[in-house]
Length: 437
Image (cartoon, rainbow, N blue to C red; front, side, top):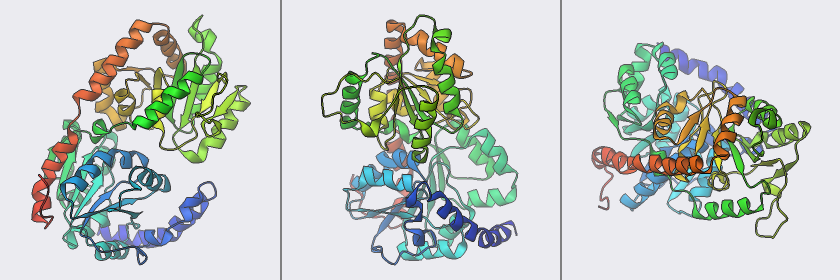
């Protein structure tokens, strides 16, 4: 009954969802591209497979899927890979990572309406479906089961807060998780919560993000950028969310009162969402800071040292470059109760990290990084600046944290091979034949 009510509500909400696309397109025109795909219309796309299907809703999930997608393409050379998204930025990230791979097709997943899900399943008839991290929709899961498509939740995570919210649906949630062919969880805590919701085939395979390899070209560009920065020290504020930048800018403006005689570093400010780049640049200028935008810098041309207070990271797909240019990085989404963002990429590059009090979306990775000495937790923006000053003023401590960061990242690799092994039986039994050993 709950599923029926949910499905009926979708028919009411669907016009609102389409209007929301138009609203968001005011700042991100790409939201009005490929709208038909969101309605299950794929007539212009090739349908001949056989298809392995990976769903990565947005940027973070798409990047996390990269090592798994590379492994699937290598292991199953006779198959094509269907990569679906829900956001334009996720689709753009996929194009950046895989645009030269002819065996990959990108499109949007349809809204979670039974008839639209059926259209998707009939058109592509994937032999297996892999949902990245958290993206579980009731009609999608049921539709895959009806179409006899084994559907797995991979790199799966479920925070205690999300568990409590989902558990309120009782048997309806249990039925949905029972319909999954399997759940490959990041941590023991995630696995325990999925089992409590009704998932039966649960394994712990680790976090694919530890297997992500930073682009060497991006690292080289970051090192080049670093040469131009006049202050000598760089503090990154990466993947910041709405509401955090005012707190950061206010504390940064009071650096000397908070940090004493420690020279103020350049602040490399990188908002998470590209539609906010202009807004954050204007905000920093109003606060009295000199601002340079990454998009206006040509790092191939010899330039005078950048003496700007703030360098705005207004580009997509260059996070490795930004971390390579930084001495220390604050990971956004954690000053406010938003759950935090991924700290693993920074650690992989040997950049120590600071996080705020709210990291429930990446709880295990954050606690492990703190225990390893790669990460420090702060309570607010003022403490962030004081802690940053303390670390930046102590070369030996900074060097030690760099070693700890890389060691932490290295110890947790291997999720890709464990995930592929866990999927092997289902892939074989689903007519995904002739893998390469």
